[in-house]
Image (cartoon, rainbow, N blue to C red; front, side, top):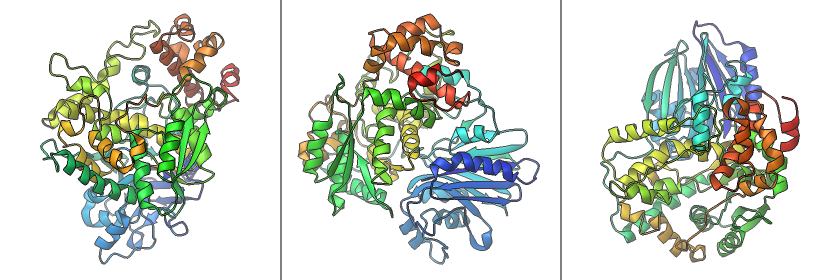
Length: 591
């Protein structure tokens, strides 16, 4: 886990060292263990290292024989040992997990990512072919962004790097702002910043003379006509056990201490159960709780699960005071905006965990791959009773936005739906899963995990998001994913046998953060502050916005949270103002 950045000029001139140094400086928080730069011809590469594997010898950039190729990478290639064994005759200079992709590129060209099992954003300079190659893992676990100007092509692990280096100005993409207000995240390649785009999950870009000349895409999911590897429950549970054990084992490869985030839900409990089986020593598990609030507190259940698994359990309390004190820092960390309130406990858990471990395993991806969301039941209904996965925008009908976005917030989903329809027949449940895998997962859940952990110099790993596990999960018959009101049937059945105290078939209330309750308690004071903020004024009617902060309506409270987050995000990432204390101090400081 690291940070990468770089550029390629259009006229063949050398990249300015000062530009590369500015990018490296802006990346530093992602890699506190070292840095490196590479300048050759019309390409410059920068790397900030968070050392996880080959602590002494794995500095980057990495180079091929005779220094003919150069590579920087952010992430982990979990099957690097197997790849090294398969690459007979290759001479490796380091023990780094990111060196095998160099040998694979020499042998396979742009198909070098096809056999990688891991999370990665890779930049590779091939001077012989006069090209720069960018590649992102098929799930989109690791971020990668780019900008094209009149003079160069530039890329970075975070949009903020491209802005801080002066490559593009910090200007809001109004259409994506409207989408953020509707969804609490943004979809597709375009970001909330004008002129900054995402390398999409699984995408490989070829850049020549500072222009994109070729794109190819590696899909995380098997083709729609893939036959399921299991059709009955017992066989599916047995196969899941083998594949999940393999994935968790791979995700534990590290030369530093690791632990996991335990919410008490099915996915994190499953990760803990498998880690406990595979590790001789107690697993270190971190759980967040919200004492003194109306939110359901899962700590008692998580504590029982941890005890049954023989884990060392650390409980992190998240209070209203923590929320007001740290939210400006949290918004500053999440430069690709996602107004997911779970960023608050995730950031605080990472701050606590960093004192003990450097790698965290987490349960993201289980719902998407195995059909866990309750909204999937509506998507499975036969026509005309089928319900759209996303039916209403967060601000829709509240009369707050200056220009009512209408259904435009759904444009990104419409594009994903069209792409899914063109790919071949899938069941209604599978189509809903594919849509969530395309945008909700990489642009909300995984963005949140990446930024909150990297803010504290930590690596987040997600063992459910493994290509072999996905190849098994997606083709499963719907009845092995959803039975009655139970989603993730295969995972729950396995967990009921592996760790019965987890009680996976008992209805759960789900993970919630009492942000609406906290905001409402100070809404009369907070509303006018937020409504007057730069950025917010451009988008909403101030009087209507103030009323959101004192409303008891659930949607209005979520809308108020989104505006508060956006106000803090805009100050930091558009105006360039760092946090000035807690929420109230920051909002009352002149922009």
